[in-house]
Length: 245
Image (cartoon, rainbow, N blue to C red; front, side):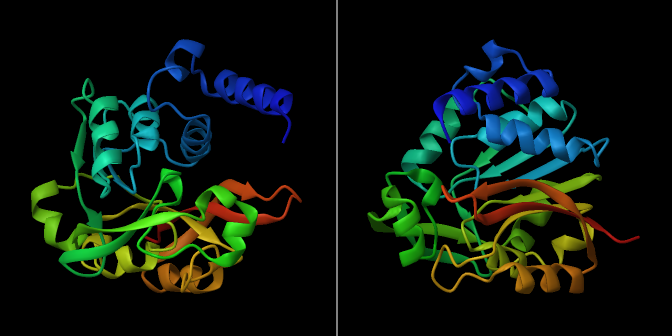
C-alpha cells in the first residue's frame, strides 16, 4: 500500500469517526483501532465495560475510551516493556485499569515469545508463512509471563453490562476463551481477530473459532476489520459477535 494511499485512508478514518489530527498524534493512538471501534459503534450503541485482552501499548483502550466515554476498560498486557508503554499512554485515563499479565486457560506462568515488532508477540510461535509475509516477525526472545484465567478475575473486575470482550492475542484466542467459560455468561459482545491461513503454529483458524463461539451462545454480527497481504489476500479478520438472547 503506497504512502499516499495510507495517508488518504487515515484521513478518511479520522473524518468519519470524528477524531481530530491532534487526538491521533497522541502516544498510543491508532488509525486501525479507531476504524474498528467506529465499525463496532454501528452495531453497539452503548458499553459499560470493555475487557481489552492483548492491550499492547493501549491503542484499542484509548480508542474505546473515546468511542464509549462512560465505559470502564480493563486492559491486559503481559510483556513488561510493552506494559510500561501502556502504563505511560493511559496514565491520564482513570477509566482504564491495566494489568501486567496474559489471559489464558490456566493460572500460573506461560512461555511467551516477545518480538521487537510487539504486535506479533504471542504465546505461540509465528509460522513460516508469517515470517515470509512479514519478515520483521521472524526474530523473538522467549520469556515467562504471568497468566490468569478471566474466570479467576471475574469478582475483582465487577463486570457491568453491556460488556465487550475484545481479544487480540495472536492465535491464542481460544485459550483465553477456555479460561473464561463462566465469565462469558456476562459478555454481551465478543470481538476477536481470526485467521484464514495459519499465521501462528497450532493456531485455530476461522472455522474452528466460529464454531466454538457459536457453541457458547454467540452469533456473528459482522467483520469490522481485516488484514491483507501485499497480494491483497485476506489473511485475518476482526469479527464482532453478540450473545443470542
